[in-house]
Structure formats: C-alpha cells, structure tokens
Length: 365
Image (tube, rainbow, N blue to C red; front, top):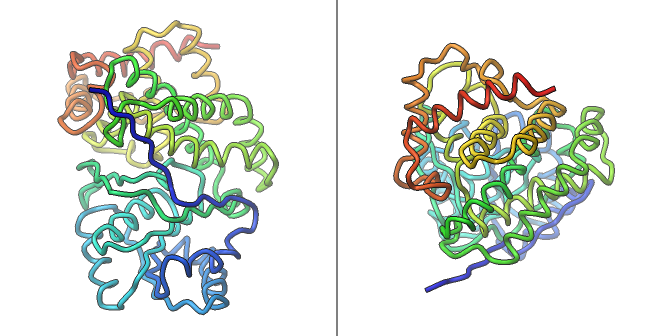
C-alpha cells in the first residue's frame, strides 16, 4: 500500500542580516540555549549571536564543536547541556555541526534551531543526521521524529564564506532531482519512509532549475562577497529546496557513492561534501545510462563552478581498482541508498562508473 509523507521545518527564515533577529524567534522555543559552533564560526558570528540573545533576555551556554558528527561528540555535548539545564539547542555553522546539534536535541528531547553560516549542504532543514565515526568514516543515518523548529539563514554571512563552499552547496543541491527521479522510477521510499510526494518531486525539480539558471552568476557574486537576487535564490535552493527535495523525494546513488568514498584513505578527505557528491552524481548518471549530452551539461556546469569531474581532481588518479571496489561495496551497504537506484548493482559496477566518469569528462569541451 502506498503511503505519502511530507516533512518540513516549523519555520524557515532567510535574508541579509537576519542573524540580528535570532533573539526574536528563539523565546518561543526555550529560555536557556545550548549554543554549538566550532571556534572559527564562533569567532565570526559569536558576538552578534550573544547580542541578539542578550536583547531577548535569553540565557545560554556555549560549547565548542570538535569537528566530527560522531556518537561520542553527541554524547559529550548532551551531557554538557544536561549539566547546564538547557531547554533549547542551537547549532551554528556547517553541515556536521548542524547534524550534531539535531542529534543532541534529539537526545535531550528539546527543540532545535539551526543557523547555517555557509550555504554548502542541504543538512539544515532535514529530520536526519549523517553520523560518522570519530575518524570520519560514514557510519549511519540517524532519523528524527520532527524537523528543526527553526532554520535561520543569514545570506550576508553565507556570502562571506569561501566561494568553494557555496559552489559545494550548489553541487549537493544538483544531486537532489537526479536522485529523486531514481527513487520515483524504482518505487523506493523517501527519507521520511514514504513514496515521493508530488510536492517533494516538484521542489526537487525547482531546485535543479534554480541552480542551473542562477548558479554560475551567484557563484561569481559570492566570489566578491556580494549578496544579489541570484545569491538569495541559490541559497534558498541549496538550503530549503534541496533539503525538502531530498528528504521528501529520496536519495539514491550520488550520496551513497559519496559515503562510499569514506572507505578510501588520503587526500580525498580534504574535499568538501559537495565536491564528492558532484562526482557521485556523475557516476549515478553513468549507471543510469543517461544521454551523453545530459552528462556533458553537468560536467561543463561543475567545471564552471570548480567542482571535480576527474579522478585527478578527486585525488584518486593513483587508486587501485580494488580500492574503488571498496567504495562501491560501502556505497551498496545495508542502510545506505544505492539500492534506490538499482538493487542489482555490484561493487564492481560502481567502480567501473567512477572510472567511466573520468574517461568521459576528459573528452568534454
């Protein structure tokens, strides 16, 4: 029997300077906040956050995020929150910080507010976290009963982050509709354990259209630290449209192959989430036997925003075939989403697709 599920944050706020309004939205959620951010993010926005909470009369404690969305880090931060008597969790920063904040709030059964400082992933709006080991190897997806209570995105803050991270968010977002189509075609389930909804598919398609239409000009604007209407559109696509799209329409090969890359040691781990997803998206397209020109269009677009399309750019040019098979094996492991693309794919099939992307990309002009 079909079951259709649509999930979304309680409130989404976006705009230049909206971080100053954080104290306006938090009191409805709690009066004593645990603020989680890494040292770099806290150095950039910490004083503005403290000022906003101070004006609202909110109590808070700050805890530094140690860099990995692992079970140990989640337990450490939850223990600190219990000791401080907090009633609300606020995550500030990038994808792993935000995923950790959601997990801590789940441990405490408390509301969570998400404040991205980069438009680099679709993590902020979703009711799940990607959990890694302390060493950074993909471990599992952790699912929650609800989405974040508040997602607040200051586009001016996001535009100050490195353009590479902005481009990574575009690449992550471009996987949304590619994967959604695979889930729909294979009659698989979305990330909220339902059939892809019409709304989820429409949002995923709008995400792709927005990114291909405005992504390059927005990227060039962010290189100059500018906020333009195109930047606003792309931040919304990277964050809200991609988040709602992947959750309500589902994931398939692109993100599974991204997770598979954690099986390899070396410089690939210096790449961003979106950079690895970009290559995973191309590999999925190869496995789907998409038309050459369609794959070439994505290759050209990725190049324009400096995303990797060759093994050398992925730091994998010297990897053995056996190691690429390990990528395929991890991508196809139970609990990941490769089966939503095709349940009959082997680890060797994935390895061949990874190599084929490199060969094809080198011929695209």
